[in-house]
Image (cartoon, rainbow, N blue to C red):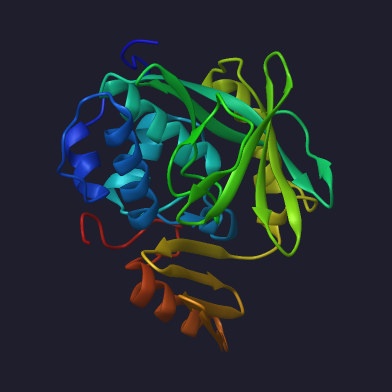
Length: 270
């Protein structure tokens, strides 16, 4: 797909944001390390929706939020920006539309954004914007199980340009996560669903605050009423008593302090 031309941003600053200082060649091992670093450093979150700050699919604004304000975002922001980074580094990458399964049924087109990347003569599904998901890229050339630090996944071919990604568990069988098309999409094509997920009472993003990121051996998740810390097989849940305690936990566990206008107070901090 060539280099990304929609906006210019500081690649070095972005890589510093995700704690990556390794090689920059467009190969599978670098792709895997970039994805892992991104997931460990940039949380999935919907806070702007609950602080009255409109999310616009403009890469310069997303870069400012994620890199300069050291925030997170949801799929359109995180995968949109990560796609741009991959293109800047020389990867052959394209945005794709995905339909997330809810109660066994897929959502509408553009419900989710993912990335398909070609590296080492293979195509890979890459996703840094789906919450609890694969830590490493998933191969598209096999229907078989793929072991990942976050579980076992499989990608099934359901049509010439359609795929279905499942997470497998011995006790529950396969659970569909989302179906996706291999057709390349422009960032603007996700605009309508991006607005829907910010405004509709049918969207789970409007129902409460959420911020979450994986750790090397677990995950930290903060909602409006619960802090959940998973480490190995152990999970500890702590009630969030009020808005003041939420803000305190947000700063302590994610390094984010929100202002009344929905912007992060501390810019450029770890």
